[in-house]
Length: 456
Image (cartoon, rainbow, N blue to C red):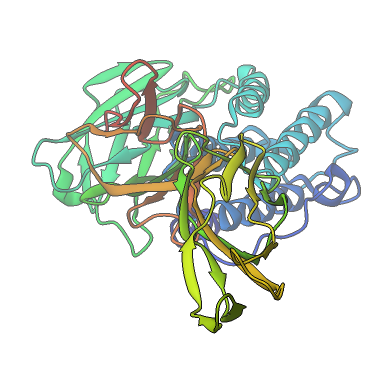
């Protein structure tokens, strides 16, 4: 029954899904009045919640921590095998303290997961130290960690599995995968190594492949020398590693390119006046733009003086026809051309006309007409910011470089790991490693490199 329960825990690691629960406290995990066996059940439930929250991650440090916790709680049950039906108070303060420390580390790792921290190294080390201390005296075989965290199912070579722990050197120890028992290639007290037929590993829908370590133990009782006594039953650890997808990840890189402000040429400004007398017309810059003085030019569209019909009495009464003549040369002048302002002066004032030799002084008003057009260009004083995007696929055996454009302002790399963390897009803004992927950046060549880490 207990083996089946632990198998359920391992299966939950494989199938892990569902919403994250509230962060537990040590007091919510352990109960002094309950039996050690019940308290370890509470720890298993806490790990189940953590596994559900972590989901199908590909981060090696998280996978390693989950593997260590799963094996560690199984180890804890073996360590307390002589006192499972006793309460926390009955086992004594020293042994109870170890279980409290173990629960505290699970809580710590739960907080790390809630903050989406990519490493559990500190909590994992404390966790391993606790188990080591608890198992030191009885010399029970126990597991601390499993390697690799990820393996590639499409390869044909065997998967090299390494199990770290203590008291693991019994020559009868085997790794059981899909009904096949594998003997260790390396058999040391703190390390076992196996070569497993890759085809024997059968990942589930989440990508986790499970196997069992059958670790034998020796009778250490006073009567162990008697030939008819048998060694205790072996301890079975239910372990799991995660398969990798055919491709590592897809990515999208975004950055903002800053360029000097560009130019724009608005429609020309047109001013018209009749009989202007030193009239000045200006156009001012906006807060974010300035004029380009070297580009500004003035075009005089109209500059004439019109004299209407006039009756002139000389020897006889004569009629002078109306006429138009060119206006003064300075009728329109560009007086100001700076980045701040453009100004034009218009000058062709009205005047009286007295026809020559007239005996009856008829007067006629003549009209000066001026039309000026100013062409100009405006430069933006605020730099232009243009969004730049590139994307692609990262394969397992090839670096994927991305050259950022000149004038870039930092980067934002969004990575979706294939067949993993389906609802999570990992975002990186600085070079770093996450799981099987390392992101590096060469500032000199402006090259961002997505580099696969070695996976079995």
